[in-house]
Length: 383
Image 1 (cartoon, rainbow, N blue to C red):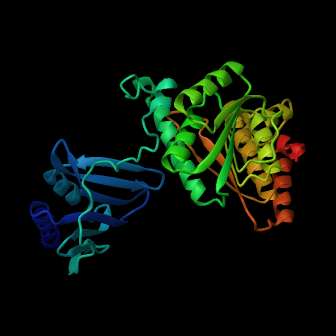
Image 2 (image 1 turned 180 degrees about the horizontal axis):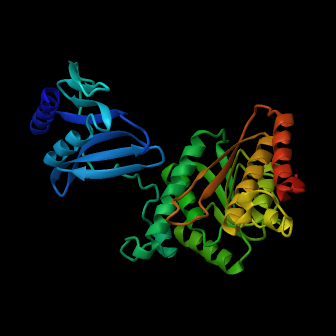
Image 3 (image 1 turned 180 degrees about the vertical axis):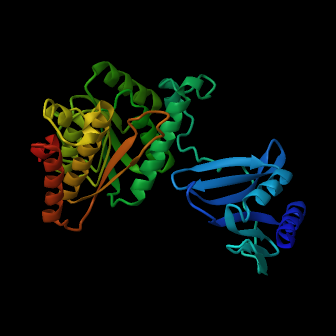
């Protein structure tokens, strides 16, 4: 086919003279397989240039790498059969080939859309927000040579993802010049220490961080570590979340506080009028135990594993709605990948100065409770 051969010739020329930018395949011939489009770009693999094809499906993306010859064979296979439009972007022109329903091809050339080529690195470089330092060594994340210990690699990734999330949230939150952070259920302090180092030593923000932990041995360990690192405004207290009281909380953090301890933490944040409440809920037992023994006609709740996940979603949905009721913008999103932990949901409340529609919010809360036969959510009782 003349137009297809011309398309492949232009691809080869662009590859050889280094003017290639990308290819997009669009307008699928049929959507039954869920494949919406395909994007091809150049990547460098083992010091050789290859084409990286991203197959964009309705539910996920898949990436495969090809040589120039394999890419030409791929285009012959996909064009007209699976996609009706393909555009080759180069630094000298945009060249588009289009197929009619009957398979007739037409082509056109237009001025180039790009003046520069994109980077050819295979993966977008990640910004490591957690700087390798003494605290990571004392916490057992790195060895004496300041290298991340292999078995702690996932923890190091989690720390960096956490700092990425916090950095984004701080940009959206109205905070005072001197910030008070309370981390409830701080544990061994991996994320607490990383946050202090990131905010104080890297961002030069005036921050005081207090970790609340019920296990005294961990509190003693963290206080000694903070002292050894010279983290002067990082302190840990031996208390339960319920017993802790302060009027000054700008940022409330509670990651993986078990069951209703998450609700206790959220309540403390609301009571202190915190600007930002960051939680990663864990162990959603209260609703499940409340409904233990009750019969339900909902077929989803017939199976144990679905029932557990459903009650987790219901619990966190009610928490989000109750935050909205208390003048917070609530957001729920994935914190870390499922491959690391299934407890990967983060629930965030940002103080809003816009009055919510309390009637509508309360109506939503009542509807959720009624749908699942819930008498009262624990956080609701605290409020």
